[in-house]
Image (cartoon, rainbow over all chains, first blue to last red; front, side, top):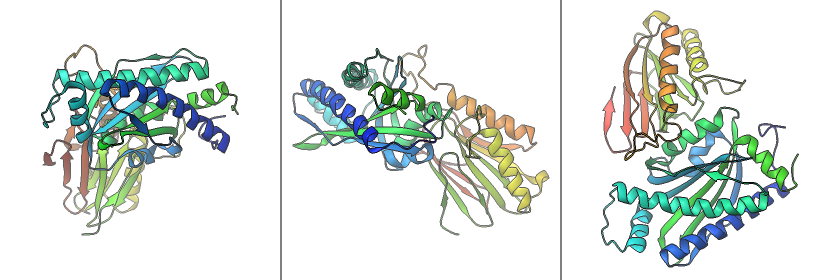
Length: 206
Length: 163
């Protein structure tokens, strides 16, 4: 069975959503400690999509955002991407470092700060996946980009497109309630074959 | 001038006279434009990968098949193969290691490989590349005008270039 030909049924979508729910619970708790604010997140979305449609699913065509990207490996492989609107990056820096500046500067310090944030969020998310799926996963170092969302996701889609025209996108938006300016989006893009392995590990394989 | 036709990843479009083709947010993907300056018809493809290692229904997913498909369509539409010229855009490295060039990110070479594959595919069809805006570390939104042959490249840092 390949991802190409199968459709995810309701039980499979629900299971992937629930996995994301638990993962996001852990990740947002980690973020909450860091920024000393309660972090909420929306109900996760699970979408099987053609690769060509992914750019329009993840952002506006002309919006420049910050992207933090990590790859994970183990019995399953895949990609984690965080996208932050520019105002959120300024807010994040303000709550973490106390910096008042509203200027967007991406020097070594700023990019390291954001990459480390991605590291912590991805790490706590993946630790949940490890427990639920019963597998050991290793995450890569984080990478930083500041560009159009569709351009940022391009190298990820290229990598995933080698063996498939379809992918499964698992996403959730997280935010601070009193200040919607602080928000970001989480994306989990398991490699196409790994989606099937994930489902198998939770007893919903085909 | 008609409204711009938008193409997505793995798609191509054949433009008749006075048409615009637009593609948003090219990162490491590469766009190939082939144009007949006499007939003023052209085609543009948004290519994902250099070459195929399995069969795929998306004819413009790979550089080699995209160039061959566009060439076939252009000739069928009345273009003269000898007059055809090509332009390229895209193929960026989206996750550069700015502060540690020794540790290159994933896909550091993906953009470059796409550029090379597009050049090779065009060379093998003897279509000269007259202009390029490729590589770098920046996303691009592009628009091709089949009347003038101009390819407008809007970079994500606000710069615009016509090639």
